[in-house]
Length: 251
Image (tube, rainbow, N blue to C red):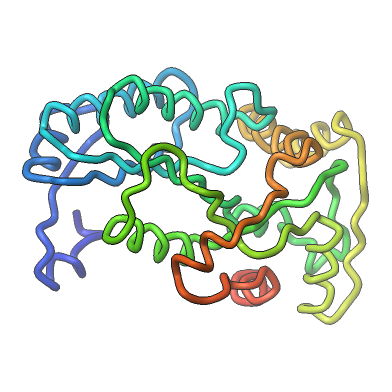
């Protein structure tokens, strides 16, 4: 609740809601015409149960529409585990019979910062083979969702809400090189070698599976398709990846 103190000070009614406490959600959703359901980030059955609880309570509370932060590439057969999670939640929304919008967000650019890691200092970016990804910023997506909540009545999946360009890791390394003013070498390794590399860095198995899944899905072209929908919603070009990295990388 303290994280929303600035909203409270601006006159917004702040309510506590917990995905595992149905009664708290009843209080949070009371009188709501729409609910924006932000994915819990918990994968597997536990995360799906949390989303199911939220959808059930929204329906019982008389909510007119649920909007869910899904993702471009949402698919029950994706190599990237979060996409399976999103696809399952989209199915729950369909089965609920409620009006709903699945927001097909572009791939979050903040994830790329983690993949780049300290390559800006070491000069070497170790990754498996990959494919282009439409890296998109949270700030642009947040603005678009505000517009959708107030002005759009989409039912079902939205258009892909992406930045205007899809860039692979080699392209990202070139951007980082330009930003830091020294060469960044992209070293391509096998999936098995990358797994060993991440294991040596102390990554837990769940994170390794997710990271490898990202590269496999990108090789499949799952995150390469761009759209003008985001730019149309926010009334300007989305933030370019170079500008985002310049703001976000620990230089």
